[in-house]
Length: 403
Ligand SMILES: Cc1cc2nc3c(=O)[nH]c(=O)nc-3n(C[C@H](O)[C@H](O)[C@H](O)COP(=O)(O)OP(=O)(O)OC[C@H]3O[C@@H](n4cnc5c(N)ncnc54)[C@H](O)[C@@H]3O)c2cc1C
Figure 1 (cartoon, rainbow, N blue to C red):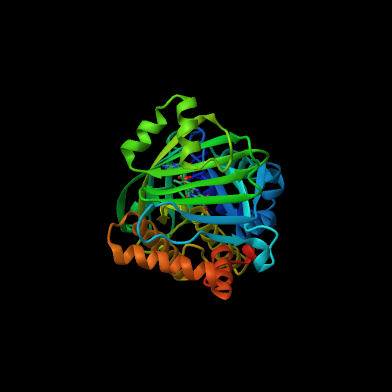
Figure 2 (figure 1 turned 90 degrees about the horizontal axis):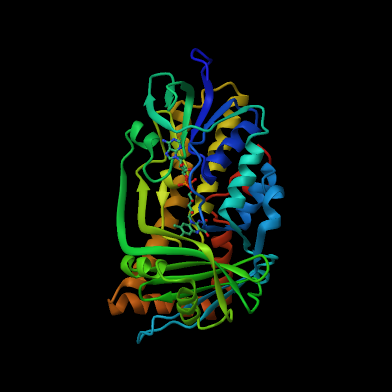
């Protein structure tokens, strides 16, 4: 990029799914934007269960059409108490048709999701995609300057920090985080199985964390196996046949005979939240803003609502000729995202801790909560509606409205 180029309206740092969505939303609405997407990284073998609002947003942006052939619907979600403890909860079964939906959402491999997003991003004229890492981010009085590996710089009035857990944008804006680690890691892989999954995702709640099978197209599923880090490392190193047998045993053979596919990933689990999502010309989206354990498919769905919200605010400011980096805009963004982020991080953190805890009253409360969900229809339906479309946050893209 040539030095001395004009200051852009926005620069997005980080080419993961949250950053790509923010960049597509901004530039698709005509806001001159650069995406510092980073150097190509090893493939992410995870899958993402995208809930219905996220799917609507991605359809509205034109991404979904490029990826949907690789996605499987999630029509039923089961939670099975597999703790073997004294105070066990009944199985809870959520069915999308009970709240008038064909599916809660769709599960897609991250590599297909990111490839669809990147293909679209590269076609948008208002978007420059830069396949380099940012080596420095500096917040100035009128603009944020992002230095690239090549030594070139990109300047913009607003920086969208989508650069993940160790966000340089967050540090440049002086935004602190609150965090804690769990004694858990998630082993991730994809499987083939002999029995059909019937579009059903099953979350076994075990004392060391959830063991979740999520459908993929045909007789394949993804597995997120949360356990203590030593156990996760041991399982990851097992030969295919032994790992398949261990998975079949822990899944109580609900999917029949298991065959594991080659790639295996491992992710240490933590909960982390930035004190604010917007300050000093920086708006944080995705894991730069919040990290939560993989329970109930909330993480990226939350990140996509961040991206849709900042896209909406900046597109409106751009149309009115307002400065997208003004404190007014970043504070408004932080305020709009606060309740959604707080409620999801607290709920998922509590649910995860209740699994790990040996404290009987907490186990009892968890069991009671799940019992009420199973037996009280209106409560179950309200929980399902809140799970797929939170009342506190319905950005326009999630409602199918273009920016
Ligand atoms: C096991 C597991 C399963 C999950 N399953 C689900 C699910 O089913 N549903 C769901 O909603 N969520 C799920 N999540 C959460 C979801 O994966 C994350 O929320 C999501 O990946 C975050 O995306 P992101 O774009 O914010 O961050 P990332 O994917 O971490 O992307 C950040 C990007 O920034 C880039 N970057 C970093 N530094 C720089 C720099 N200096 N310059 C340029 N680029 C930089 C990185 O290379 C990377 O590409 C799961 C998480 C885990 C751990």
